[in-house]
Length: 152
Length: 152
DNA sequence: TACTATATTGAGAATCATTTACAATATGAT
DNA sequence: ATCATATTGTAAATGATTCTCAATATAGTA
Image 1: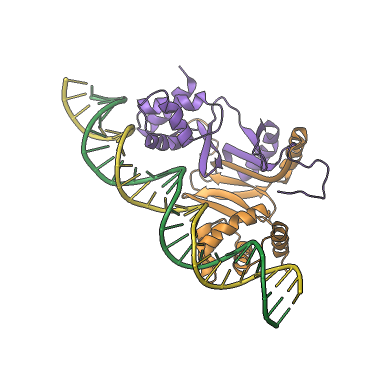
Image 2: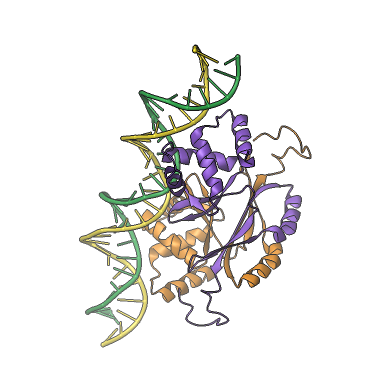
């Protein structure tokens, strides 16, 4: 069985909640997608496979997946919150180009040591890290030309 | 004159926009606040000083301040977007306790080297960094007791 | 397996932050 | 001072997200 289902089931149990059919559909779809998604996209994709789902339930389930640590908020796009699954998908840094919208992802690991030290100093127990860098990707960056027409 | 006003004015000029009275009020208030704020809080604070402002204008001006690099999105709280001014306020890491809501801030500097290296590899020109860590602060962390009643 | 207490669901209505339309006004350049 | 254009306030519109409620599904227990 999928490990993520196991995690979700355990989370639900602990909260006295039930692992229902709609929640299964949502969970599976979330882990079949490897892109960012918003509530309605998720709903549409499930809807194309079955009728046993409603948008309200999708909205109700997302917070559970967040709490269970299976999904994280990715960003906000066109007025909608977007998410991505986490499990089996190590934390990464988002690099977003403000010009062409390109989205790159890199590993967060090299930053852990420095972060861990700060966490220790603060006596803070980290559970979730969100790091995004906005700027210009190599295509949109007037390369090496530091001092002119750097128009917005 | 305040440097931030200068920056805003230049930004507006470049875009063919005007530095109006309401925009001045908004700009000044943003830099008088040293906490996170949402659109309505900002509006209320300005409103307590003058009537020459409307909520719509606040909403219309925030994107300009973001574009001008004077303000950055901080987080989303109670269904509202929250922002903070940037200028003269070095980038920092947000540590948010998921239990009591405490918000700590630390310096981002120690992470720069690792980030800069990745940026170089990607040929990405960073302009804006947003790093937030969610977890438990020392008050809410059942210290050193890893395996019991870790109730939500 | 049937029963039961309780959590969950779908549908649609309700919320409420954010945007927008539009007529009146302010701004900056000439 | 004049002008072309950007901006504003007001009120209405939009649209994502949440909530209400009656009907249903779930998991534990007998």
